[in-house]
Image 1 (cartoon, rainbow, N blue to C red):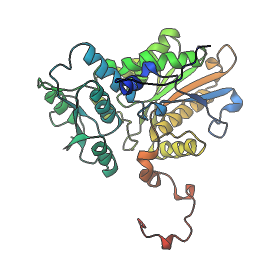
Image 2: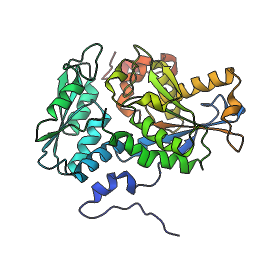
Image 3: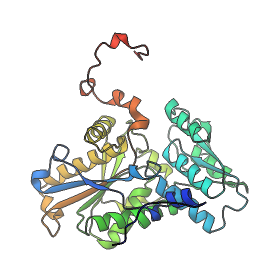
Image 4: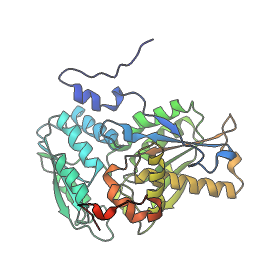
Amino acid sequence: MQINKNVFGGPDAIKDYLNPGNLPYLPLVELPSTLNPFTEDGVRIQAKLMNLLPLGNVKALPAYNMIMEKALNGDLENVSELIENSSGNTVFSLAIAARQFGVEKTNSYVPAEISWNKLLMLLFFGIHPIVNKEPESPSENDPASGVFKARKDGERPDMLNPGQYENPDNPGAHEKWTGPQIWDQTDGKLSLFCAGLGTTGTLIGTATYLKRKNPDLPVVGVMRAPDQYVPGARTEKLLNLVRFDWRSHVNHVERVDSEASYRLSMAMSRLGLLVGPTSGMALAGLLQHLQKVKDQGQLDQLRNEDGEILCVFPCPDGPLPYLDEYPKYVDASEFPEIRYKDLLLNNPE
């Protein structure tokens, strides 16, 4: 039996390691009944742990794919800098991927309300932040938006804007890698796919592949509810910045608040699945949708050939970058008490 020893060597070792096509399948892990209230209905819910990619987040796939395709097409010749509108996983993944292809400097437009921790993360990875005051109701062609400014800067001959909100190689990465893995891991018996909506690349690319295999497969898109905060996810208003036609790929849309997103993220993490708030949001949206289907008496329509309802949702990243945010959105009763707190030398209160 041929064994993939998962060893990378030679001058291109890191580049090869970051290439998703060279990696083993990412784990697909079933949630226990404590997180799945529909277990007795024959529903199985599995988490696709995209947070276990080498860079710890789902954006590593489209970032590598976008840069690789630019290099293959000769679009990186004479390019010395990247410019993107992103304050988190996308731009740091782009920066690391770009260095493997000879582009050392990455700049990023970030919103004025960016947290200090996220700003430190960008600085840690050598990214040059450009703070931008975003319009209240942004559109893709608003000259004040970071998306527009990054696209405009990318017109310089020495600078490239990968364009995560419109570059087909963003969803193309998930059509190439994520969709085939999920289909293979579920033996083609998938009943429903659910994903959060950010740049929408994960949902579009994965759904494109899965619906090619099963055109009747229901796809649920989950967005932030209005005036709610979940890092990496978007409200319906903010989805106006995305040029991808994500609506044509979804059968149902769910809206989720901050509290449910952070609470379910923490619940999964405490059981050993170290996933962040957007993972909690996707799970909350999936559970909301399943409850609606059950209330309508239509669960049986989702059963596969084994009589089960097999659901999969991707987990984009881990909880560690957001630890300071959980107390803001999860009730204090969910956290253990600190004994002798008055002895702490660095008490934030």
